[in-house]
Image (tube, rainbow, N blue to C red; front, side, top):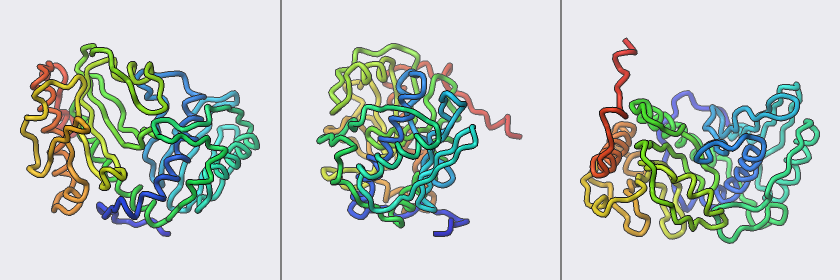
Length: 311
C-alpha cells in the first residue's frame, strides 16, 4: 500500500480491528520486552514503551554490546525491521502468522544481527497469558485494518504532543504502552500518592505501585475490548477524589464510567467532527482541569504557554 499524502482521521471499528490487534498486541509485547530487558530501568516504566513512527511503531535506539539497535514495525510495507549501529540489518514479514512463529523468527533474526537477549516470554496485563512460544491462537493480520489503526495513532499522537507542550511540570512522553496497548501521556502534580493497590493481571504489584507513586492526571487512547467494544479516549487521575466523577468536562458527549473510574469520549465522535483535533484537545484540557482543580494542583507553577516563543 502506498502511503497517503493527506492522512485524515480514519474510521475505526472494534469488530473489524479486534482479531488483528489481538495478534499485533502480542507481537508488540515481545518487541517491548526486548526493549525492557536491554534498557536501564526508568521511573514509571517509561523505558519499556514504543513510539509512533512514520511507518508504524518503533522502539527507538536500544543499547547493546556493539552500540545501539532499533526494532520497528513498518505497517506500510508489512515488515519488521531490525537495524543496528554495527551495520547489521534484518527484516521479517508481517502477515497472518501465529505469535509463536513471530517469536521464533524474531529471535533468530536478532541472533543473526549479533544481538543476544532473553526475555520473560509470557505476556503482561492480559488473561489468559499464553506463553509466546506456544501461542498458536493469535494469528490474524489484516493489512488495511492495521494501517487504519496506525494512521489514527499518528493523528492522536500529534494532538497529545500539543497537549503535553503546555505543561512544564514532570510529564511523561507521548508513548505506546504495550501492556494494555494504549497510547498515553501523563502529567504529575509533584506530590507523592498513596500506595497503589496493584491488581493488573500478570503484572507485579510493585511495578504498578512505582508507576503510581506520585499524583497523576493521565489521558490516553484505547481500542476497546469485548465488554466495551469501541475505540475511546480516556482521562483519569490518581488518587481519585470522591467527587471527580461529578466534574463538568467537554465536549458534552464525554461521560464518566464508574466501572472504569475515568472519563471517556468515544473515538467516532471525535473522528466525525469538523475539527477532530480541537474536540480532542478540549476533552484533554477539561478533564485535566477537573483533576487539577479538585485536587488543588499548583497550576501556576506547572503550566506555561510557549506560543510567544514561536514568533
